[in-house]
Structures are given as structure tokens and as C-alpha cells.
Image 1 (cartoon, rainbow, N blue to C red):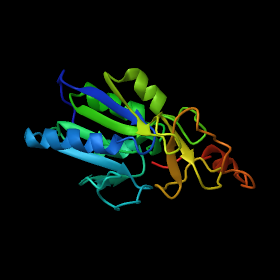
Image 2 (image 1 turned 180 degrees about the horizontal axis):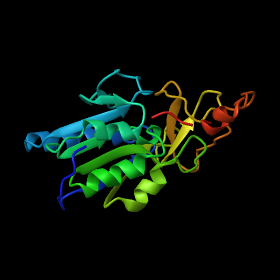
Image 3 (image 1 turned 180 degrees about the vertical axis):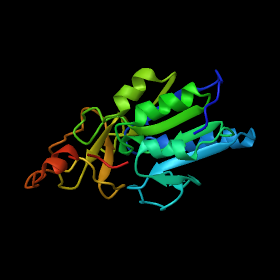
Image 4 (image 1 turned 90 degrees about the horizontal axis):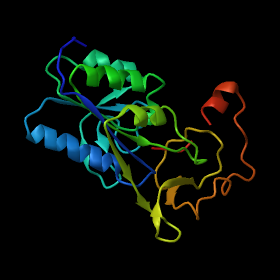
Length: 207
């Protein structure tokens, strides 16, 4: 990444449960930036290949081309001085350097738009998203519809028996729930706990 001196950068975070429209909103903002003839780059984690290996795809099948990465630090290798807007989808999977990378981009004049889960399948804060929320200029909290009662939903209910924190999936593995219908232990009877220290560190919910 080339250094530049510009005071127009900032961080926008779109967070919420699965099926709440996070990727859809990210795609909408990136498309509008492209319409404004701004140079846009979008990134997604390599682990997320649910709908397409390359494009960012929302649950309602809207899409935008992206670059797959394994770690947030890789973003800096792609962002040149002409890039004005950077979008990151499923950012909870991009590693502990996410906040540092977003701050570097924003400080250099880039508009950074980040979408990701703010809670895991147990309802716990999903690092590193909480730290990013603390430093972002703009926050959008999206809500889904509870699949049990129809009320606004902000939790991701896992419906398959796994205690691994990262299990990438869609409607076959998760559904949106409100706080009253959410039960993190619901599918876990008989599920085995992670067998390794690495597995315990990687104990949630999908994307």
C-alpha cells in the first residue's frame, strides 16, 4: 500500500445476525460508489465459499466481484493510491489484525466499509468485530426476522449439532432468532467439544 495524505477516510461497520441483510447492504454501498466512478475493491475471506468462490454474494443472490484473502493484512497488498473505497465481507473471519488494517486504510484516506457478525452462535461478542465497532465512525445494526415468532431478530441460532466456533453455512445450519427464542444449547445435545486447543479457539456461527 502506498502512503498518501488525505483526510477523507473513515470506517463504516454493518453488523448483525445472519440473514439480516449485511452483505446486501455492503453490496449496495459498493455499487453506489462504483456509479460515482470511484475506484472500489472488495474482499471476502477464503473460508467463505458458500455461494461463490470469488464473488461476494448475499442470501438474496445479489453479488459483486471480490478478492479472496486469508488474513486482513493481505488487503494492504492490493490497495494502491488510486483506490478510494474498500469493502470487507464476513470480516469476523479475517483475523486479529482487522482493526489495525481498517485504521491504516482510513487514516490514509480510504472509505472502509465492513460487514460482519457481531455475535457468535453462543451470543458472545465475535472478535475482532467489537473492537472495530469502537473505532468506526458509522455503525449500522441490521436485524433479521425471527424464524420462530416473527419478531426482530439479532441472534444467530445454530440448528446443527456442533460446538466448533466457526462452521460456515447458510439456512441448512443457521436461522435468525430474537433474544427470547434464541437457545444456544438447543442443537448441542450429544455434540462433541473441540478436541484440540486450536479447535477450542475456533469454537461459531457461519457468515
